[in-house]
Image 1 (cartoon, helix red, strand yellow):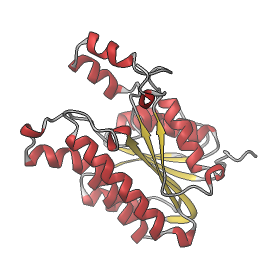
Image 2 (cartoon, rainbow, N blue to C red):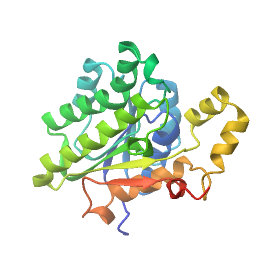
Image 3 (cartoon, rainbow, N blue to C red):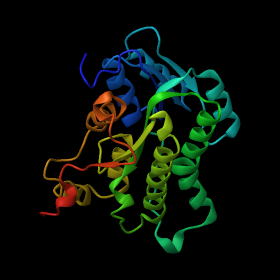
Length: 249
C-alpha cells in the first residue's frame, strides 16, 4: 500500500460522463476506489462505468439543478470516503451583457448545485470520518479575465465554500480542498477552439511553458487530495497551470 492508495474507498464523482469527471473516475478506480459516477447523460455514464474495473462501482443519473434529484441521489448512495465535484460550465459574458438568466445559468451549475449537494450529503450524514472533498476550481478565481465576471465569480465563491466545509467538519477530520486549473484539453476546450479563432487559441497555448493540461493531470491531483498522502491539507487551493501564471511570455 502506498500513501496514494484508495483501496476500499467509495468516491462520488459528479460530472462523470465526460472530460475531467470521467478521468477522475477512471484514475481513482485504478488506485482501488469504488466509484459512484453521476451526471445527466445516462449513456455516457454507462460508458464511464464500462471503463472501470471491479464490480462495486455504479452510476446514478441525476440533474444537480433539481433539488429532488439531489435528494434522491443522496438517498441512494452509501457512506462516502470522498466527493469530487467536476460538474461545471464556462461561458464568457462581458459585464454589459450580464442578465438575470445568464447569472443563474453560470452560478446554478458552478456553485449552487455543489453547495446544495454538499448540504444534503452532510445533513444525511453520508460522509465517513476522514473523508476528503475536492472541488474543481480555476485560476480565474484569483486571476480574472475580460468576459469572465460570472465564471471567475462562481469559482471564487466555490473556493470560499470549500474553506467553510474545512472548518465546519474538521472535528471529523473531513478535509476540503480545491484544484484551480488553467486550460485543460476537455470537450469544453474543443468548444472554445471552435468558438474562437484557431490563431488566437494557438497564441494563448504558447503562454504555457509546459503546454496545456490534460484530464489525467487534474485526476492525479485529485487522487493526491483524496488519499492519505494529503491528510494534513485542508482548506487549500492547488494551482495547476503548467507554468502559465509565471508570466514569462
